[in-house]
Amino acid sequence: MATAARPPKATTRDNILRAATKVFARYGYEGGSVEKISQAAKSYDRMIYYYFGNKEGLFIEVLEDMYRRMNEAELKLVLDIEKPVDSLKGVIKFVATYYSKNPEFITLLNTENLHRGKHIVKSSRARDYSSPAIAIIRQLLDSGARQGVFRPDIVARDVYLLIAATGYFYVSNTHTLSTFLGEDLKAPEAIAHWQDFITTSVLRTVMLTPP
Image 1 (cartoon, rainbow, N blue to C red):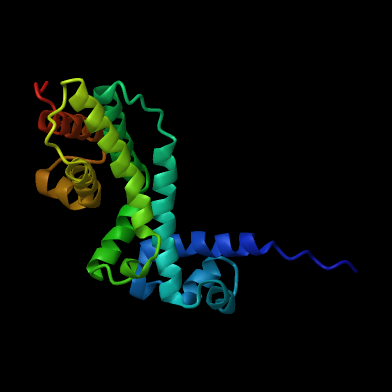
Image 2 (cartoon, rainbow, N blue to C red):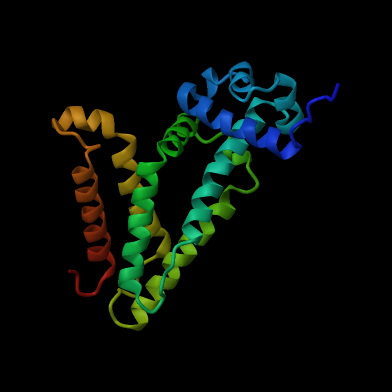
């Protein structure tokens, strides 16, 4: 009788990583037990220890993977450095849309911030994933300054934080704000309105002659 072929190592590892992402997003770090993750991955506890060392090692890789996926999606943006205004609008739309479409990313970041970043600080790759985003914005700001449309004194990191903060806050607080404000902030028209507001706010900050 032929025996069933074992799945490739990469598949087992990836399955665990995907399952851990869902479990940690649902239960948090404390509630996301190794047992729950192995069950969700249809694997065994020992495989988690084999590939990731321990639960913390797995959680760190989940965070790294979330950053990596956003970074890879961002690098696929088609931007024209010689059209800095339109390209900056594209970056803003991408970030705001990505947060809305990937709520697990927001949940996991909230969890890690509750832990004061004690896990991600142990990552050797986390900073690598923020550099391209800031570099893109810096190129657009430099191009806009040369063309006389952007202020020359704007710091790319500050623009990055402005975009990230306004996009992140809206998504991470959607449920409570919807109740507090008495409107459905998850509605497509509400999301579109906020994205327009972010775009206007950023452009008014960076442009010599704001729109």
